[in-house]
Amino acid sequence: MNECYYDKRMDFFYNRTKADTADEWTGPQLIGVLCFGTFFCLFIFISNSLVIAAVVKNRRFHFPFYYLLANLAAADFFAGIAYVFLMFNTGPVSKTLTVNRWFLRQGLLDTSLTASLVNLLVIAVERHMSIMRMKIHSNLTKKRVTFLIISIWAIAIFMGAVPTLGWNCLCDITVCSSLAPIYSRSYLVFWSVLNLVVFFIMVVVYIRIYMYVQRKTNVLSSHTSGSISRRRTPVKLMKTVMTVLGAFVVCWTPGLVVLLLDGLNCTDCGIQNVKRWFLLLALLNSVMNPIIYSYKDDEMWATMKRMICCSSEDKSQERRSSRIPSTVLCRSTEISGHYIEDGIIQGTICGKGDLGDKGNS
Image (cartoon, rainbow, N blue to C red; front, side, top):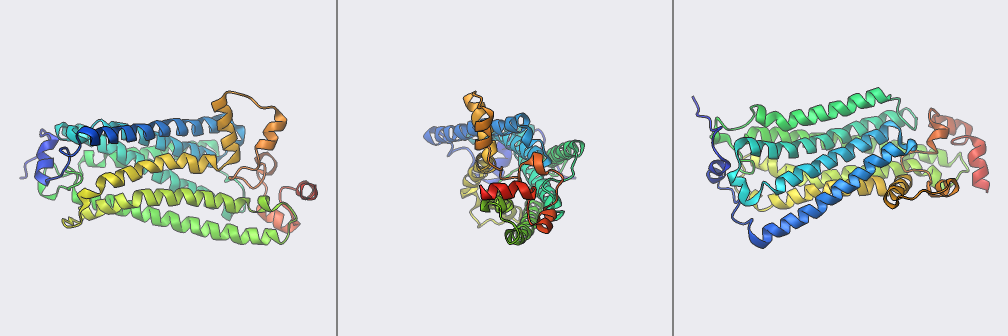
């Protein structure tokens, strides 16, 4: 029967795997990492809080897509918490941690990654449902969206707790990982392959949606006389969404590949030399998301500016500043429930007279 090591501190496992954890993280290097991390974590907290507040405040954002967007911002906010906890439990401190505290440190990171990943997958499904049915917004009710959000976090918490629940190497240290000294190598293979497969599925879904929207936009362009910017709105939407997905894949894939190599027990891959850089790259993803999702959306940016400046604009200024958001074809209050196909058949979008008059003005 194998002996279990639940009562050992992490120095026992780090020394056994010969991981270069603590000695290099001293002096100026540690201070630099803490300053760098603190700055970006503060930005993550502030920017994602603004995104959530904007969705709550602006009634034009009260649609399933925006609720999921706010939940993605919440996942990034949670990632900021995980990085703060990591900063104060890394370097020389790593070897002094108990097994449970180390599980908590890694579990927070795994939970944040899973929450973002599953949320992006749900957004992909929501966009697919909407656009393939030629609707601006999906038929998801608030109850269903709430259920989806609760499910996302339930899955994320469960996946973050899987190693703690038993899939670890505390009772068989011969299968311990090098990067995660109390994680089983088989778990790292499962974790990294699962995430990479989900990445691939989402890329395929968004490419399919983008090709469909591009094709429909070309059809609409030959039947409508509205402004070019309005006809290109669905294409701009998909470019924005695919940019977010692309940033997520670029920021997380290197780290997942390193975990996969570690899980496959690749001793000559030099994974210890790059692990910290890939972790910082993953941190940057939570910084980039609010910029890509929010600041490229005119109405979202206008809402956030009003909250920052604590000033209200009159209605005429609001109408001029809130151009058609990147996430809708036309003003949501005018076209919710309308079909894009109706625009093709009638030779217009959002009402022939509306766009016709605006196109001629």
